[in-house]
Structures are given as structure tokens and as C-alpha cells.
Image 1 (cartoon, rainbow, N blue to C red):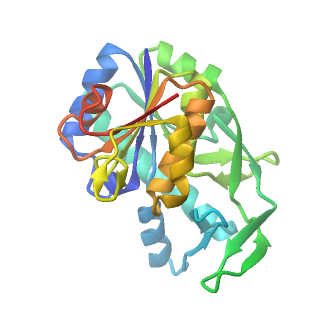
Image 2: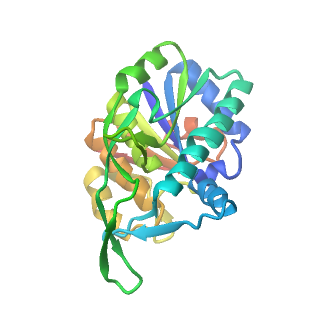
Length: 268
């Protein structure tokens, strides 16, 4: 059995808490486990310290994302694949978890196609065509390399920096990277740890959704959660058994998610 877990930036901003680390160790002792992490807020903070103002664009579907020019891509890779990734790996190893830090660049774990153009919707509602910059659309996962690492008892910790067709670095969304890693590995589940207990509609937690229901709800979901539900849909379409959205601040959050305790579970 294999689980892929995405640790959201909203959780990382509070540090990797001991409950998550203890839970990772427990789960990794029982089954194969791979982690994918975010950290967009940290990228923004460090970029602004360096004097590089960050720009965000909104797609016609309402999905908000970072506009990534060359300089931003350099900062993104430095923070994601360097600072955040190694902090997580160091913390896990301190607690005797056999973690190995990687980015999508390493061994071509995440391959992506550079987006030539982006459609951005302004505050006035008008659509504009802009250069795609260094944003990528994931095309392939090197599941063979990940399987080899997993077979040796290690926990891969993957940063969402992809390798483009011209071997350039590309920014890919962390939630969707987790979905593609889970899909490539045909994992039993993908778990998205965030700062809320799951999908909230009309102030109520939605405990269960089918794939069809999740697709229909995406236009009604606010920023941040919309990407998680979209990633969950993509994972299920690639053969993942179930997608779970849950709180990373809960006690033993991964075990709780596997038990379907106070979270949103999306299945076929």
C-alpha cells in the first residue's frame, strides 16, 4: 500500500509540527509513503526581501497562480528545492525517518511543458493574453525512480520544481504535482494536508464527494481550496484510489485522514 501526502504551505508556515513528524514515522513504518510539499508564502516573503515584487494572475476558471518570470523562477527554485525541502528532510531525519529530499528536476521526477501563453482575467473582468513565463504543465512522472527509492525504505520528499523540455526549471503547482506523483505511482490515496478540516460549503464540512460532484463544485470553491479539489479530481482520473483533504494541524493528521476522520474524502 502506498500513500502520497501533500504538505501545504499554510502548514509549513507554522513549522513542521511534531505530530506530523511522529505520524510520518508511524505510517512509513507500516507502508510506503511519499511526500510533496508546498511553500508559496515563503517564496513570496523571500522574493520581496530580495526586492522582487510578486505578481499573481487569475485564470478564466478563477484559479489564482503566481506569474513566474525568469528571476522569480530562480527564487522559486532556491526556496522550494533548497530551503524548504532541506528543512523538512532535516526535521524528519532528526526523528529517525529515512527521508530523502528531491525536486522534480532530480532524475526528471517531474517533467513539464512550458506554457507559451496564459489567459489572465483582470479586476475589470477583461481577459488578457500574456506570456507564459516559466510556468509548467506537468506531462510525465519518473515513477520508476520513485519506486526504486521507496523500495529501499526511504520516504521521498519532493519539491514542485519541474524539468522542462529544454531542461529549464519550471514552476508547477504543488497540489497538482502531488496528484501526478500519486497517479504515476498508482497510489492507494493522495492526502492534501491544509489549514482547514476539508472542503467547507455553506459553513459545513463536506465529508464525502464523488468525482462527478467534485467537478461540479469547483466553480463554487474559493481560492486555495479550488486547486486542491482540482488536483483531487486529476488524481482519481489517473487511477488513484481516493483523495482526502484534511487539516494538517490535527493530532496525527495522516492517520486521521486514512481513517476518514473529520475530513473530505473524494472517490469515484
